[in-house]
Amino acid sequence: MPDHDRVEGAARNMGGKAKEAAGKVTGDEKLKAEGKADQMSGKVQNAVGGMKDSLRDDKRH
Image (cartoon, rainbow, N blue to C red; front, side):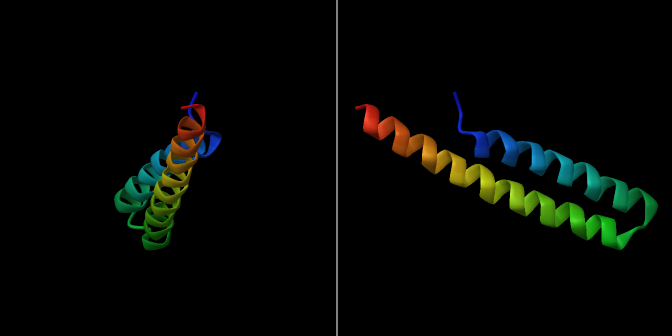
């Protein structure tokens, strides 16, 4: 089972993409920027979760 951070990071990334798209459609630069920031945060959180998964897998072997 993937680490909680990976799942939450992926969800944050997807939400950020939706926010960015909504910002583009409405011309709301602030919403667009928030979406990009959420995506970056989600990618970092997903990467941290991936490292945790790798460490957990290494301990099992």
